Structure formats: structure tokens, C-alpha cells
Image (cartoon, rainbow, N blue to C red; front, side, top):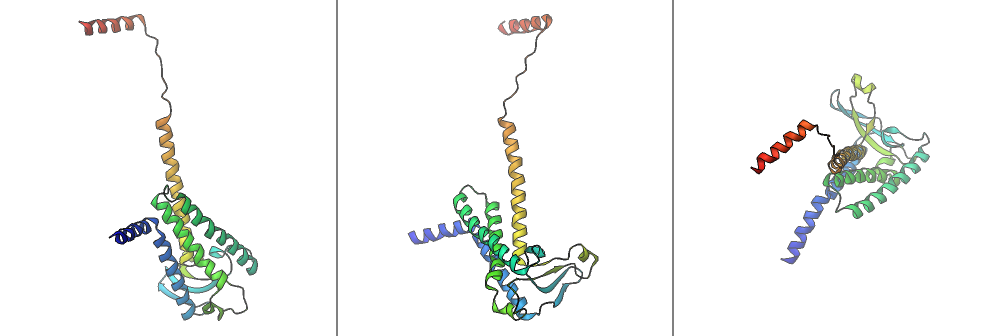
Length: 220
């Protein structure tokens, strides 16, 4: 019975920690990249929803959405350093602030961590499935989500990305929204706690007499 209660307590903590969300996202990211790498050649494109979603296999040697230094090796080292810092800092902050942290913030941090780890795996290990495409090039990240291909919107949004990138973007957006919500709450609390201004009014003689009469009537 005691072991069963401990297991239930652990499951409850695991659910509310949202670690499972990060693990699930990381698994989906790894599997999706390997499916693309094993069944497509770089540059191949498969239309899923015409004018909206295509799977276009590309290897990104820069940061998210192709942002970063032109030199692939420099970009790889830079990304590994930044992602490694995030992968260390987020769990430390998560562990220290867990009890005070609202659920949506836990979820946001786990989603960002999963995204960072997913792309870091590509950068560092660059699995054999990817090597057949570019054997002489430094490691990059497998991207395949290509929106609006074949439509006019593709000229505006032409980025190709992956599940890990989506996790980082969604997580950061959640953090931004939570920051705004917290600021609004703090502003409202500050207004409630602000000292009430006491205003004094100088009464005229007639007003004084009226107040005196009212007091007399109350006594009677």
C-alpha cells in the first residue's frame, strides 16, 4: 500500500511537472526527422495539403529558420554553446523554482528544453541517417515543415523548420504571454495596496448648522 501511494504521488508530480510534455515532444521530433531522412533525399518535397503544407527535406546548418553566421562550422559551434547553456540553465531553474512556478510556466520551459535538446542532438551527433546526404559537411539539423509552398504566401513565409523549432517558438511565446499576465496582475495588486488619498472639505456655516441639526435629531 505504501509503495502504491508513493507511485501515485510520483505520477501526480510527473503530470503536474509537464516533463512528460517535453519528453513526448522530443520523441516526436526525433522520430519525424529520422522518417524524413530515411525516406527522402535532400531537396525532395511532398505536398501534404496543397498550398498550405509540404514536407521539404533540407539540412539547416544555421540556427532556427536559417538565421546565423554564413560559416556552417561557426554556426554549429555557436548553436551548440547556446543550446548547451539553455539545457543546463532550464533544469536548474526548474528545480529551484518548481513549487512557486505556475503550471503554464512549467509547460513552457519543458517545451523549450525539448526543442533545444532535439536540435542539439542533430548538431552534436549528426546521426548516420543524415550523413548519406552530405558526408563532407559539418553537422546540421533536419528540417522538413514547409508551409504555403505553391501559394503567394510562400514569398512572405518561406522558412522550413521542424518539430523542435516549433517547440522553442511556442515555449517562448508562452513565456511572453505569461510575462504580460504577471505584469497585469502585479499592476492590479499595486493599485489595491496603494494608500487611499484622504480629502478634507471645508464646511460652510450653513452646512455646519445642518450637520448639527442632524446630530440633534439622531439624539432625540
